[in-house]
Length: 122
Image 1: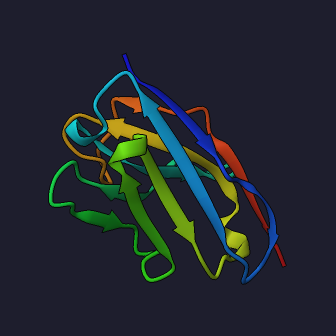
Image 2: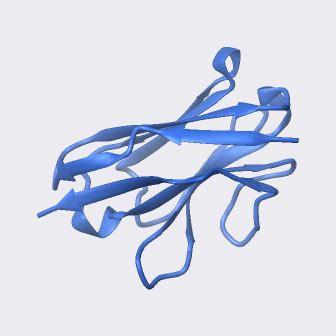
């Protein structure tokens, strides 16, 4: 099956940037959609960004649009989330997700990574 491994989280100041990475194994990267969700303490897991397996098309939550950019490197089976202008409200565990159809808000992905902590201090 599919294994997802995230990296790149950490503790940063408001206004700083981070780049998260997620490497997939077990499937050809180009044959599935990938993306990111996040979950803050006491809150539901929410969609952040997704990228389709073709075109590619990208999708963003309104809360991160204009600040975050999702991209992929098929040669490395890796999806990235470039996070700029980070805010304290971005603090959460960020989970890489994979779905054989799409990774979008309202759809539960087929596979999850273990998560990486992002903490933004003010």
